[in-house]
Image (tube, rainbow, N blue to C red):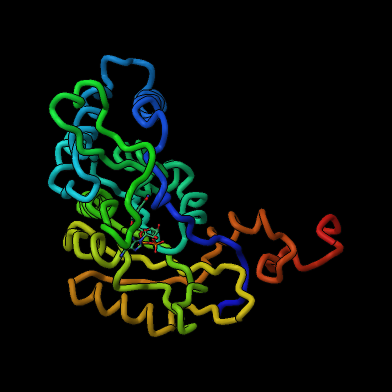
Length: 289
Ligand code: NAD
C-alpha cells in the first residue's frame, strides 16, 4: 500500500470560457520551428513545412461556429505533422506534471505532448468565430474573446480525442501509463483509472495488440491528507487490468517504482518514502537532517 509522497496533480490543460490564446499562430509556428531544430537539427530543408501545418490546423476550426469542428476536420493537421512509431510511449491520467518530468521532453519516454502534434498546441485554447463572406477576408476567424464552456459543447475533445487515438496507434513494445494512486472521485472512492478518461476512451482501445508487447501500469502518489492512496491491488487498477486483458494486452503494474521515486524525491528528499535504504543512516548523509 502506498503512503503519501508527492504533490503532482493534474492541471487544467486549456481554459474553458476564455477566448483563444492571443498570438496563437505565432506561438504554433514558433513551436514548430523550435521543435524541429531540436529534434532534426539545423538543416531546415529537412523540416516539415510549418506554414502547411498551421494552415491545416487553422482550417479545421477557423471561420466556423466553435461547436462545429469535428475530429475529422483535424485529420489534415495530423497528416501534416506525421507521427513515427513510438517504442517508449508514456500515457498519463491524473499525473500530467510527474509524467512530463519522467518523460524528460521525450529524452526518456515519449508523451503525446512530446510529439510534434501534441507539442504544437499543448496548453493552448482555440475556437472559431463564424464570419460571413465579406468579413472573412478581414478576420482570421478565431474568437479571442470567448470560447464555449465544456457544458455548452465539448469542442476540445474533437481535437484531443483524435490526438490520443493517433498517439496510441503509434505505440510499440512496452506502453507505459502513469496513474495517480491518490485520485478519488466525488464520493471519495479511489479512481486512478477512470473509464471516462481520455486514456480509457481513446488510448487504451487504440493500442495495437501484437505490436504493443505489454501495458506497464505505473502508480504514483500525490500528497494525500485523506490517506486514501492506493496501489496496484485496488479495484480501479484491477478494472484497468481487466479492460486491457480483454483486448489481448499483457499487463504489469508497479507502485512508485524506484526510477520514478528517485526523480520525484528531488522535491521532497526528507519524506519517509524518499529515505531510500542507503540514505536512512544520518551519519552517512548528515546534510539531509
Ligand atoms: P486526466 O484525467 O488527467 O485529464 C486530462 C485533461 O483532459 C484534463 O484537462 C481534464 O479536465 C480533461 N478531460 C478528462 N476527461 C475528459 C472528458 N471525458 N471530457 C472532456 N475533458 C476531459 O487524464 P485523461 O483524461 O486520461 O487524459 C490524458 C491522456 O490523454 C494522456 O495520456 C494524453 O496522451 C491525452 N490527452 C492530452 C491532453 C493535453 O491537453 N495534452 C488532453 C487530453 C488528453
